[in-house]
Image: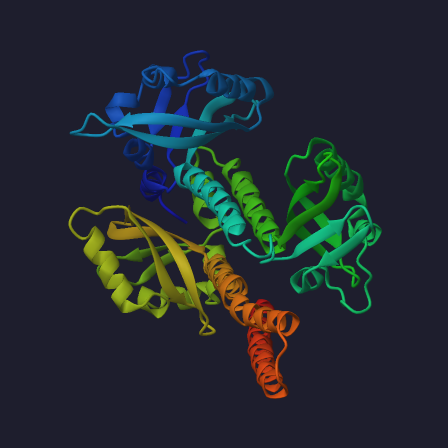
Length: 484
């Protein structure tokens, strides 16, 4: 059992910035503040303790406090936890006139006494600045990918990943080989028609997709949307689809072209992250100012956490998530040092970073489980006093699957760009020679010898074109095999 002094240290240095507020609405006096909160706002404890929660944040002219006030009042009325939205703050940078922009989301959790009255409110802040930045980068990346896709469409529009064409007048549909793979179909046995495509849509998405296509045909506007399909084997897949219409001189739509990108793995990853975030929020709601609740913060965390001695490097305590994830028992952890799971050179780098001033550590490291499996881990660590010893509290997040997924996407995009270059540059040379030789046949009377020479040249160019097409097929097959 952790002693009270240790619990106070853990509260002061837990990864999430946290305030303890009194329920004295509308003031909401700050009763206590942990070190990570002070680090986040660049203030000392005396600057906040004993003051109204709104006194400090009132200095931000662009900050709308209504969301925080409504959340705190709702906690008092319902006596249940409440989560605020994402809010933007601009902080002064020491020694500079520039402002630093950060984004935060807060959870307000009531602490009730035996009679059910609210005695305190635990205000836990999550710094989501990096998450917002990642989202912005993703949006910029998506835009760049769309622009790149248009540039690579020379010769064949939208032909690099799951492209299709629909002859509206004759109701004929043509698909690329990649699109057949995405849909899990055999090219020889499936007859590509608009009606056949509709049958493959998830029943709940058919009306939505039909409305999208109708809108494109009526307005001539390009469309970008997500849809779900069901493969013949029953597997559900998520697609991001693009579509554009071509019209005749009278403005009547005659053809639609488009492309589909399989985003199933991304959807599953997003769902897993949402689930993990929800589970973490559920644990945070159980926090309160008591020895048991401080202990729960450590032991009930869904992410691995441990405390180790800076001098001996030995584990002093680990939570259940660490035991489950790394495969060691509690007794085994307490008998070994951190280099058993954490390479010595990485520990040395860690110690160099925090040696002088006990700085907070954030970084990515390779670690090893008991079964020998190596994983990529994002680490957050804070210095604490644990039972009178100089220690660090470490939180670990396994990002192996995310790193592998990003690498797989990069490799796939590399192969797709190779295919695009071959299609738009290499294929044209032998094809142009064949067309020129055929024109000679049509335009001139030539001798039998010259005719044979021309036929030899046509055969040579055809063989060269065949080799290029085989190379494209090999690269496409390599992408499919890598995906599997």
